[in-house]
Image 1 (cartoon, one colour):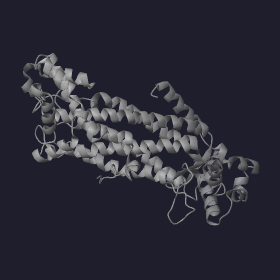
Image 2 (image 1 turned 180 degrees about the vertical axis):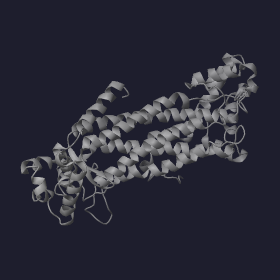
Image 3 (image 1 turned 90 degrees about the vertical axis):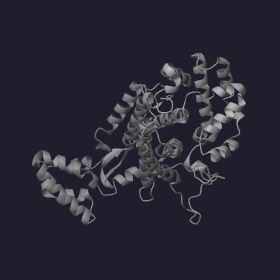
Image 4 (image 1 turned 30 degrees about the vertical axis):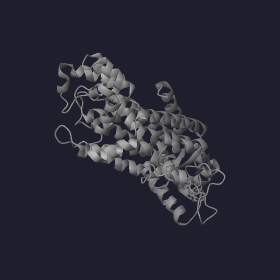
Amino acid sequence: MASHVIDMIMLKNNFGTSEMRKIWSDENRLQKHLDVEAALAQAEGELGIIPREAADTIAGHADVGMFDIEELALEMQRVKHSLTPTIGALQKLCGKNGEYVHYGVTTQDVVDTGAILQLKEANKIIVRELKDICRELISLAKKYRDTPMVGRTHGMQALPTTFGFKLTVVLSEIVRHLERLKQAEPRVFVGVIAGAVGTYASFGDKGTEVEKLTLEKLGLNVPEICWHSSRDRISEYADIIELISGTLGKVGNEFYNLMRTEINEIEEPFSKGKIGSSTMPQKRNPAAFEGLASLTRPIFHSVSLIHESLIVEHERDAVSWRAEWIALPEICIYISSQLAVMKSVLKGLVVKPENMLKNLNIQGGLILSERILFALGKKLGKQTAHHLVYRLAMDAFENKKQFRDVLIGDEKVMSILSEHEIDKLLNPKTYLGLAPQKVDQVLSNIEKSGIL
C-alpha cells in the first residue's frame, strides 16, 4: 500500500506522470542494476577475465522478468544489504556460471551506474517536454506579440508591455535551461566501475579497460577517476532541475495572479464538469496554476537534500549516499508533473486582450505618466518635469481624477503640449518600447540556434 503522494492511487497523477514514475520504479531500478551486471560480464568475457560462456549466461539472465521483487525485498530486509540479494538471485539463475556474477566490482559501482542510467532516461523526457513547452510559447509569443497589457513592478501597475513580451522572457529562460542540460550531459551521464575503494585493484592491470568497455556497452561516458565520493555530478543535475522548476513555479504563480477575478487577464483551460469548490458552485479556481506553482518548493527542498550528499566520509559512506535515493526520484517525478501541466495550460490558455486593455486604462492614464514626463522634459528638463508630473499625478490619484483632465487643467503643461498631443501620449498601445521587436529577436535567435 502506497504512503507517499508520488505513488498514492488517488494523488499520484497530481505529483508526477506515469511515464516518469516508471523510470524510477522498483522494476526499472532492478533492471538497470541487471544491465550493469550484464555489461560488466560481457566486458570481462571479452577481456578474458571471466569465461565467455559465463558472460553470455549472465547477460542472458539479466532480465527483471526472471526475478521476484517481493522475495528480493524480504531478503534485503533480512541481510540488511540493498544489492546482495539481487546478486544471489542472478547467480542462482546462472548455475555454475553464476560464480562470475558481480566479478570484481562493489555495490556502489552497480547502484551509481544504474542510477545514472535511470537519470539519462528521465533526462530524455525532461528535454522533450521542455522543447514542447518552447514551441507552445513561441506560438503564443507570435500571436500576442503586440497585445498590450499592464507591466507590473512591486505588485503595482508600472508601464505598458505586451503579453507576447512577457511570454518571451519565460521562453528565453527555458531555452537557457535546455542549453544547461545539453552542456551538463557529458559530465553527468558518466558511470563508474572501479571496485571497493575506486582503485581497480580487483581487476589487476585491466581495470580501466573493464570500466571503459562496460560503460561503452551501457552508453555512458567514462570517468577520469572514480567518483564514489564525488557527488557533484548528481548535484549539478539537481541544480538544473531546481532552476527549471523555479521557472515553472514562477509562471504558475504569475498566471495564478493574472487569473484573479479583479485582474482577469487570462484563464486556465476549463473543461466541462471541472469543479472549483465543494461549496461555492460559481468558482472556477486556478487549480492547474496552483499545482504548477506548488511543486517548486518540494523540489527546492529535495535538491537541498541532494546537496547534503556532497559531504562524504573517506572513500564512501551510505549516510550521504542514501539521501540521493530519496531525493533524486522525487525531483524527477515532481518536475515531470510541472512540465506536463505547463504544456497543458499553454495549449489551452485563455487570453483576454480586452481585459488587458481595460486594466491599462483603470488608473485614468496614470500609467503613462513617464511618457508625459519625458515629453515635458524636452522643454523643462527631466528633473523639473518629474517634480511637475509627480505633483499632478498625486493630485489625480488622491482626488480620483482622470490624469488627462489634470494635465489639461495645468497651465505649464498646456504651454508645452496641446490637448491632441496629450491624447496621443496617453494611448498605452503606442508606448510599448521595443517589446514587439525583442520578441522577434528572441524568436530569431532560437531559430538560428537549432536547439529545438
